[in-house]
Length: 402
Image 1 (cartoon, rainbow, N blue to C red):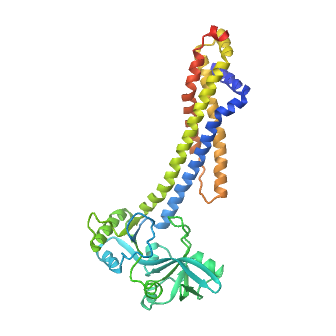
Image 2: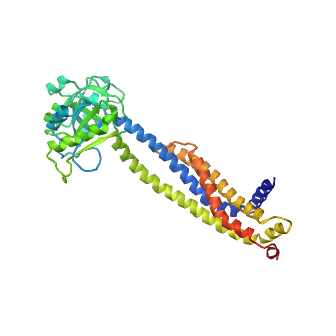
Image 3: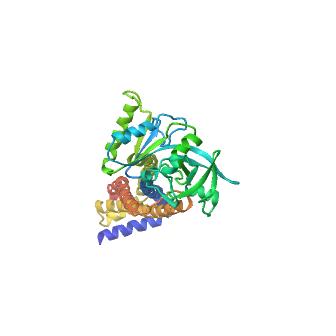
């Protein structure tokens, strides 16, 4: 009952100074709002990462031409991956379910009449469909007969098909890829967004032999896609491939690799690294907002103690103990930060919903920010409210009444 009375008196004191109370809770409102939005975007990013890794394949290894730590895609002029490397991996590495070498070109013009688009063009073997676990939704895939005859046939991604044919079926129609005319024999299943954020469906597939000899005029590969039988052996097999290619390319330490081996775990780390850095920065800014808000709260409460000395002296004179005064001012501090937390959480949920509806960012709204915000606000209220509460409790009744 006594505690209830103290809280009631503290609430009345805050209500009498509404503008001051608002300024005291402003830092908490800003900090909790930012924290809520950041966590919603972070959770959405995590979910998007897992979706993209699923698109990459949990059992997949990609060997790309060229060394370094840049993007997954190789440069057009990189010539360090050859068909002999593919044969070496096939012969000497066990535990592989499917493997497909690929040559690719970026931004190749694909035309059909007046319609035109630019896309990735992949020259592939028939095992590409198995290695990527990516099959046609319409028509037929690239087959062994196409390879043997250097057939001028292609399979389109859904984005390319839509750009050139709209909603009509492209099967049996002709398109011009670069300067070569191809018959469309299939359309790939839609895959959506790639692990690095590009459109997975903006592509066309042609037989590897046709692509190397008639379209690209080259004898080197861009990448090798490997699908392992056992997901638990993904990293060991990736290391076997790395060691074998170093041997084939006569690379010895301290020379750098002229190829890159990537797994789903590497892709996840890469995407999380970018989003994690941004989240850390924004979370730090939110934390600073809470600290600044706490400092403002403490200083305004200290001023409030000086202005309310008569009130404190009167309460002490009629029997209130130092503990009662301390509790009242600490309760006011906690009430301010708690109310700021509630307002900030509400604004944060609203802002997160707005960000999700008006941008391409993925957001996931949960109660986790609310729980963390409650904890942070209580800590800020306690930590920064102790000094003003202690100052008020130490006032002498006689001096306060004077």
